[in-house]
Image: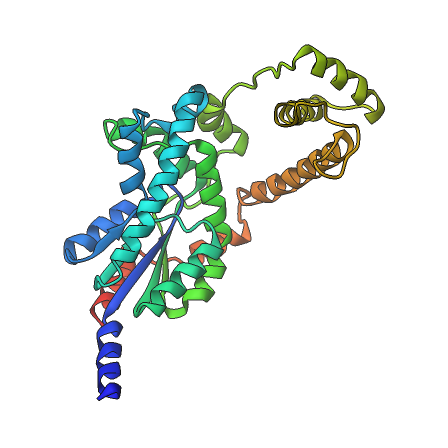
Length: 327
């Protein structure tokens, strides 16, 4: 009897399907999901924005986040609070939806680790899991994000351009990882016929990023902290403006927290020398990451070429999705 019950559970669980979307912000995931939802109205869409956007509105924060993050520190704080609250509600919604026969996760999947965990969790809950991967050039997703708030008359959010960069980079670099992870239950498509970014990164930066980049504010230290700071950095050698600014931030944080001057050298918490060493290492790391990122924008980049070569038409993606959900 117990074996029969377990067999019936396996049969029932085997009919449950989950689709995890992958694609940068602005790639067109919503359009694909609408097409699937029209054919499978019983599908449950799980999108963190369905919880984040209402909470932003509750707190009076504009959905034009690219401008909010440029000029409104108070709204930035409220947006962070909204995000924290939304994550908790989104997690509860996932947990309460695990009996639904079809789940569609409308997420970017820009980070590999969390997707592995999500796939495992779904499989342990009896779901067969598929990934639909959508790609568009960086210029395309930046342009779509830039106009999204206005095009939707303020009903959808435009995020910070740097967040668009991060999601695009993460999803692009993880193509092969996802292809291997999902095996036969993986399919990719491009959502822009141009496939590659024709504009240089400097052009994209000037058009879509710099207009929404907050201006660097002067860090004003209390006079006694300023005097101590100026005296101690004399022993650190020649410093560039970036290093000085970062050290000022650290000195102010240390003074605010400890009501004392940051020491020249200290292992925990860091003193001037240790912080400077950390700043230099982070600068070199950021420089290398930027170099690797710029390679993605080069003509005939092997990662991009691999994505395009392995992409199917929109109809082929919809057909495979339909076959997956029906079997």
